[in-house]
Image 1 (tube, rainbow, N blue to C red):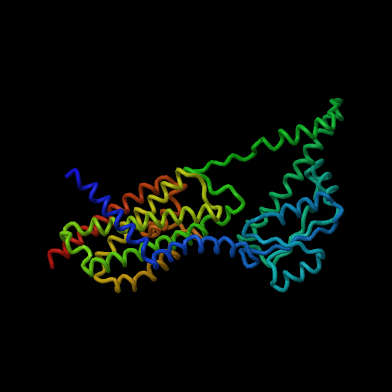
Image 2: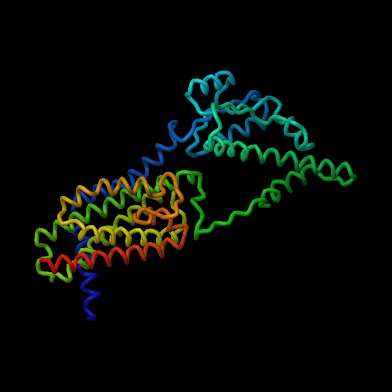
Length: 382
């Protein structure tokens, strides 16, 4: 009995080594970081989520230029492009070649100073031209608000200091600047509480976290499915002939698990390369949960389908269903959660929502129990 775990690990190592000598499996492994990188790059091109033209009517206005520079330096799925002429920008939007035009009017610095002194005044900080109001446009406009706010806050802080000086409390200008730079932005006016174990990637590509992670996870899942075909082919060709029928299923699971772990390692490398990696502990736990769920489902598929050809025909629909149902691009909340039926979900959610780690273990146990039941039925019929 004591030799069984060692024997299992020996077979595990041999099966993993066997996989690494298959050119098709290596090609699929290389597909994981390639798809992740392509998704990351493609989402940042002009054909991303939305294109916004930025116009500064007064190039001598340092505040306006600072806002425009902050927008143009943004590295996300929002593509910002600077245009010199407002009429040209509006015409481009009217022709459907851009989604919106943001015009920063002349005298913005004075307008901000006026508004900071009296927020009841009716002022225009920016002009937005677009066809219609959509949820995406509202979300994108939050970026404009977020860029303008630091400049406005500085003006409001200065206006408050002027009122204090007017009351007879002198404030040295250098002291004011130093205090504002060192202390003002250390105060958090919004407290963020993440309900999972980790926040989304806090780099500039955070907008791309789910699409990049989802596409790479699909490729990793495809690798495990391909390895499952190899396991079924080995079983059909007599590779497990010397193994008793009752002990073949654990070896098939070991083969699938080795493939899933190798794919998860490549997935982790892809996330690091694409800038979507968060922190080691949650990412490692999510990768292991994804590997376990993938291996368990593939083991069940080995007993659901009678031949490698049947499973091969089922792989495209399985990948397509995973792409549609799993929260890769959008997350749809339903009373039932059909996305829990696909391992990709655990790669997308387990790194930030700890309970999905438990879901992955339960899911894997159910898949393996169903596979064992089908295996027993098959052996009785044989």
